[in-house]
Image (cartoon, rainbow, N blue to C red; front, side, top):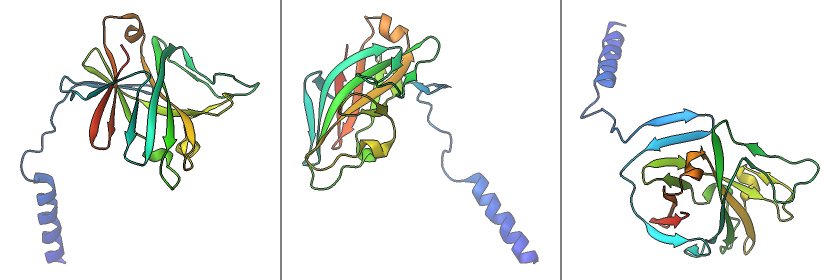
Length: 193
């Protein structure tokens, strides 16, 4: 029993001391308010520039076409039915929505979990994680669950990348807006403004 106690103390000692430098790198400030995650980071890697109206192909897996960017007080379907889901922005915030169309070029179902993740960079230093949503073909509903974004082979889906940002990002027209994606080990910067 005594040996077990000594072994436990030694194990705990190793766990608490660790090795090397354990201080996390301070890349900026994280501010969680509601669904908005803000990180200030001046080390954004510049990527391949893409604009609205252009597209990016990921090998033979999928093609993503960047169609339209808009600001809105609430994310809702284009042609809402009598009952529909919507997402209102918090006080002092608005949504930036980048509308895309994704086509599955593969032979298997493309999981919504494997869609590229977007990150909005405002004014070259403020980072916001984008949340993908999908709109039904008839425009009557928007959904944010992964399984609604699954795409069958050779089919397309409307995927909206939504970001809740302070209204300043909309009104400060001199501040740049870039939606950044990691696709096929490359960084793509979709220039929105």
